[in-house]
Structure formats: C-alpha cells, structure tokens
Image 1: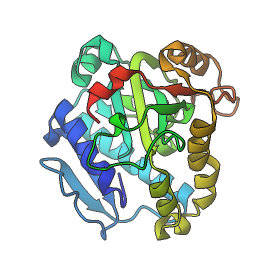
Image 2: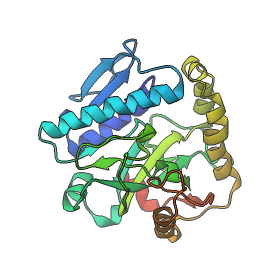
Image 3: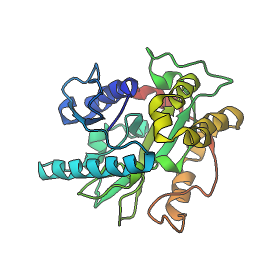
Image 4: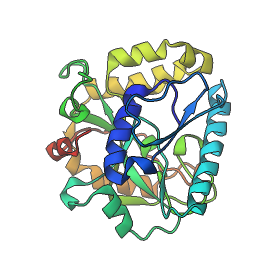
Length: 272
C-alpha cells in the first residue's frame, strides 16, 4: 500500500514484475485522490479509502487491510506472499545465481522468512543528489545495517502483520542467510527534506520521526566509518537472531549498534 510514492512504485513494479510477472503484483493506493502509477503495466492496482491520518492508527488499519488481502491470495492458490513497502526491495545474494522466485521456491518456509535489513542512504560528502533517470545502486554505495528493516516480508500462510511488516503476531522470525531487504527511503537528502515538510507527513505527525530516524540514517552514513559489508553481514544476522527486546520478542534487534557498511560491488548488477 502506498500514498504519493510514484517514483518508488514505478521501480517497484519494474523490479518485482521482472521477478514474478506484473500480473502477480498487488498495489493498493491509500486514498481515492491518488493517481495510478504511470508504469503499472499489468499490476493489479486498486484505490481504497484513506486508511487514517495519525500514524499509529493509519498503520494499524493499513496492515490489517494487507493481512486480509494476503489471506485472500492464499485462498486463491498462491503458495507465498511478499509484503513490503514501495521503497523496499527484497533481493537474493547475487553470488547464489538464482532469481528471487527460484530461491524462495527452494526454501522450506513453515510460516515466514525475513531478510537482513539494509538501510541505503546518501553519503553527503561523497555522493551527489540522486539522478532519477539512472539505477539507484549505481549512485549509492553506503548503508546502515538496520534491524527495523529485517522485516517479516515473506509469509507462507495467513498471519497478522504488525505495523510496518516488522513482525507477525504470535510467531517467531527467521532470517535467511542469502536474503537482503534494501530500504531506499533515505537515498536522497533533498527529497527527504521535501517529503518531511509535505502536508501528509505533517498531518500524520511524522516530522519528529523523520528527524529521529530518517535524517539520522543519512547523518550516520555521512559521518561514520564504513566497513566492507561482507565482513559484518553474517555477524549482524546472528546478533539480530539472538538478541530481542523484552517487550518485542518476535522482532530483531541490534543492541544499539549502528554499523555503516559499503555495499559489495556485485549489488550493482541487481538493476534497481
């Protein structure tokens, strides 16, 4: 489900459509005032009543709605359902040599599987503003390992997602060794400033979240010392698997560690 996010929606359709076929994509536009994505192709796009204004209420409504839609997809014969936001891209480790569909089909998934969350951002000292005509991963080399994006994004049966796909209620999570979830919401500082001051974000009361979380990612990437991602990916999966917050046992945590990484060169071949 997306609102005012056509830039990412077009890329989302292009990427996932190539993986699974556009006819197997389901997009719900949050609000009857929304316009259809220009490059939706054969994707199933539906406008729905706006799910709410204030962020907590809106997120609860949104994920309840999407949990219901996923249940319908299982009833119609799908074996797996991927749930993610328009700026999130589930990828397979390129060295595995399999498409996303091939890899997921090879896994034994009882309830769900998660991918390591990689929060890609702009390095203000080394990277220019985003050229929207070019692939993102050709222009962005740095990221923050962020447990908030180690989401329960692939499910094998009907479940109830928590807000933001961060967990499924009543079930554990399992992080796969070859899956990454790339979050691109923080890839351009100027775009982030514009969005933070938009009517929707102000109405939802999300400006504080943007300062606390989103701009903080760009600051961490720009001011931190980056290490080779391949040296820490496996360790990050272990930390997020073993350590949980007491009040959120079914969500991964990173013990407060903010690890900045340089993405492997092979990620550029993914074509996002």
